[in-house]
Image 1 (cartoon, rainbow, N blue to C red):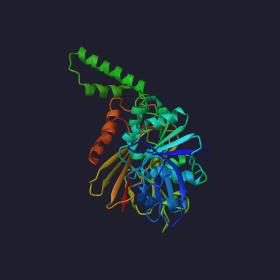
Image 2 (image 1 turned 45 degrees about the horizontal axis):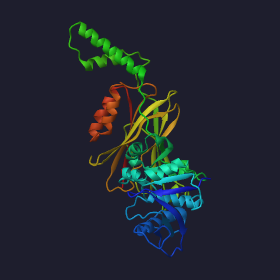
Image 3 (image 1 turned 30 degrees about the vertical axis):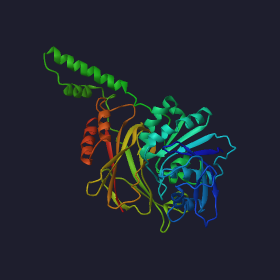
Image 4 (image 1 turned 60 degrees about the horizontal axis):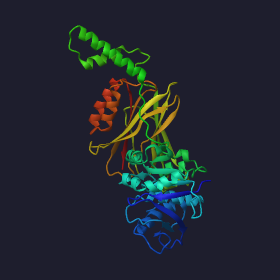
Length: 433
C-alpha cells in the first residue's frame, strides 16, 4: 500500500499537505502554515468546504472540523480544493504520507470541487506547472511515481505545458484529466472496496506524453500516385489541371480495400444516475445510498426527454462497437441554450481506438447549475481502424470542427465529413434547471 504525498499547485510553487488533524466538531476548520499557529487566509473557505451544508468533506468522510498544515502559504482562490479532497481520502485510508516516510508516490493537483464532486476548470495551469518543475523533477529522479491531476477542461493547456517543460520526461508522468474526484481516487486505488465503476463518468484520461496521429501510408500513397497520373494525363492533352477534380478522381479510383467507408455499427445508450429524494449526490458517489439508474437506447438525431439537473449525479452515453473490426473515433461535445445562445464546444477524444465488440463511456454531464434550458450534443466521428478518410481532408475537417463558432458551422463541417467517408453519430439531450 503506497503512502502518497499531496502537492497543491499554486502560481508561486507547489505547497505540500504536511498533515491533517481532526478537531472537535464545535470548532471551525483551519489551514495553517508549517505547523505554526498561523491561520492562513483560505481557512474560512476551507471550513465551508468541509462543513455541511456547504461542504463535501463532512458528507463524504463523516467529520466536520480539521486542522490542515501545509508547507507554503496559499493566500486565495479555490483551486486547492481537489488536492485537499484527495488528501482527506488518503488520510481516511491511512495512506497520507508522514514526515518520516519515503515517498514512493506523489500527487500534484489543481481544481475546484463542486458539491456533486465534479471538478471545475481553473486558471494559470501553465504557470503552476512551470513553477513546480524543480520539485517534480526531484521526485522523478528519486524514482517516485508522479500523478498530475488536472480538471478535464484544462487538459490541453496542461499537456502543452508539460511537453514544453519536461519534453521526453513526459512519459514518466501519469496525467489524470478529472471530470470528478472519483477519476483521481480510482487511479490511486482508493475505492477498491466500493463499486466505483458504477459511478465513474468515463475512463480516466491518462496520458504519458503526446502522441502524433499516425499516417495511413497505403491509402495516402495510392491517392498521391493516382492524382499524379491524372495530372500527367491532362498535361499531355494540353489541358489546365483542376486540383480539386484531380483529388476527387484519385479518391474514387482507389481500390475498395483501401478506400475509407463509414463504421456504421456503433450503437449508444444513455445512462442517467440520480440521487434518491433528500440525498445529495456526494452520498451516491461514496456509496452511502443506492442510486436510481435509468438506461435508454438512443435514437440518433432525436433529442432525449429533458432531464432535470437537480439530483442528477451522473449522465453518460455508453457507446458499443458492434463490428468485428476496430473503429477509430473523434468525439466532441456541443452546448447551447434553448434560444441558440451560449454556444460552447470541447474535444473529448481525438483518434480514440474502440476495439471490436468493446464499449466506451462518454461523459455527458451538464453543468451542475442551470438557469435556463440547455441542449447538449455529443458528436462522434468514426472510421474503421487502419483506414482513414480522404487523407487530405479529414485532418482539416477535424481542426475546423474544433474551432467552430456556432452550431450552424458544425452542421456544415459534419456534412463535409460525411463526404469524406466518415460516419457521424449525433447524441442529443435537453436539460432543465
